[in-house]
Length: 467
Ligand code: C2O
Ligand code: CU
Ligand code: CU
Image 1 (tube, rainbow, N blue to C red):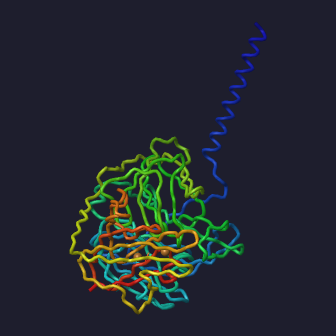
Image 2 (spheres, helix red, strand yellow):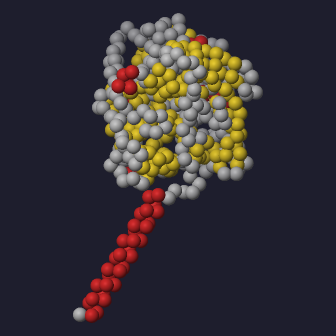
Image 3 (cartoon, rainbow, N blue to C red):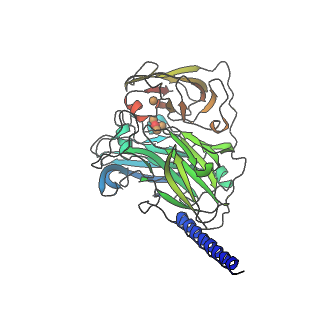
């Protein structure tokens, strides 16, 4: 009897001990973070200096700054109204927006509203130069559905360098239709912007722009200006607005455990219906809005956002408030893409040959107009990539200013559901052809270009005059 009893006691004690040990281990892994990990900063909302609800007056200042991305290292940066990146500008469909931009840099700059449908002179492209210590004032009426857009410099020859040093910010367009959906929309709480960028920092702590387009060990991925941050979210539905603000890096994003999420928007606004996904590809300048449901996870659970094999953000689930937001299946009504044989078809061939890049064999010329068209005239653009590179070519994100377009076909196949909404940037792989349906609402001179900013800088850009 006795030996049996003591064996039983022994096992009870051992198993109790093991349970305790695992419990402790579980608690530790669930709640501790890398002690250096910083909280995800949320860009502030730019203050509207006008009381009238239908008018917004904003002011941006492009300035120099310093940041400590790596502890003890002070990186020289640029920012709008701050040291790095810029405030988020919220606008409403239908309102009049007046923005003045002060240039406190000792170099020329411009501010381009990427994705906004505005007249050419308000677009902020290479023709709207703001001289050093000069100022530019522009105004336009918002005339498009709710979307996540962005702004960044666009001077001819210095876009890549200025964006790399930190000049970029988000623009959120809101409208009544999207408000009525009751999607998560408490900015920074359950509606979280993620501006993702790749940055290389030298041993002296300074930005070093990657000219040869290969990832190196000093390359970091920053989100809202922080390397590998953490964010605490409510145990419920969380909307992330994701912008790939990198100069050249494509993102392949997914969540740990291959957690599914719903994509609800593409570049120019809400999709017709939410699409279930478990990973996604984002080329430079592309945006998506997704909703991740954390309600079934235990408080304290950590979910990792990954890019390829790299962890880029930790999400920690907390019980903060009751989630009253919704995710309806139908999100918007987007008009059908109707084409006819009378429409003008324009072809654009993007090519790379060693260090030279071109569109239709031409390199950008600020004084040459490459294409002309008229307002409210839908046309078809056929864009293809023909790279002659040692490593097979890398593909290019093709972007057009002043409009939102629709993808008709990718290699003669209808686009995936998540590519059927409004777009202003489309990634085209080597040897691929994409057909888009495009039309301009306003007059002016607009750019179209590859959004790998080093390619844009080397001349993979053209101009279309809309009359
Ligand atoms: Cu993001 Cu020519 O622009
Ligand atoms: Cu643009
Ligand atoms: Cu390119």
